[in-house]
Length: 254
Image (cartoon, rainbow, N blue to C red; front, side, top):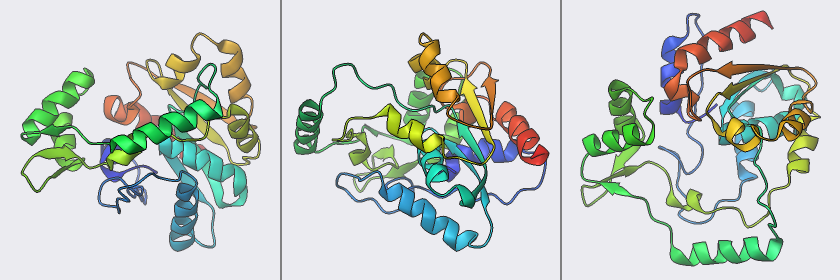
């Protein structure tokens, strides 16, 4: 589960026929933008409502990337009976900042709110495509052009911006607690497929901390870890064929 355009490359690479639902989270794409700070737990309620609407009497398979994996894994720990299989793409929690304290985090949040976040603009979608390729050298020109159309919108002044509420750029006023995430993961009953990019956020955060990496993986009672080669954090853009193959092997086998 993630914003639909970012998963399109994976859907195109699937060999089997699947019923795929990929909604835009609130504040992304065509979903409503709040234009004010977001309360992260609302995403749990959004997911709960989506599942009630689309599959009220049966558990579902959920595939989530990054923030989507964060939401899905927390939800699967709270509502284990609602999730039959869980796939997490390059997410294993955040790495708490050293010396992070509540007063400092809240103070930074207040300053960010006062600054009124803004998105970077581009004169046209070709410029955005070039920017996407510069940020991610693995992104092909064809995929960059597709994304520049699918994940952007035209402003009233004719400029192009990413279809993402800039208020998402503001970090939470609550310090991240790894133990909270671990407690949720320990409650997950569904089989979990963990796809880790060899150059993604999981390795950046925990590659030099094998003990912490192991302690997080061991929270899942039934987990299979797969490494996605030659990929950065956006595995669905870099290696959709690898993702699709591992996905179908996991979903069909279980």
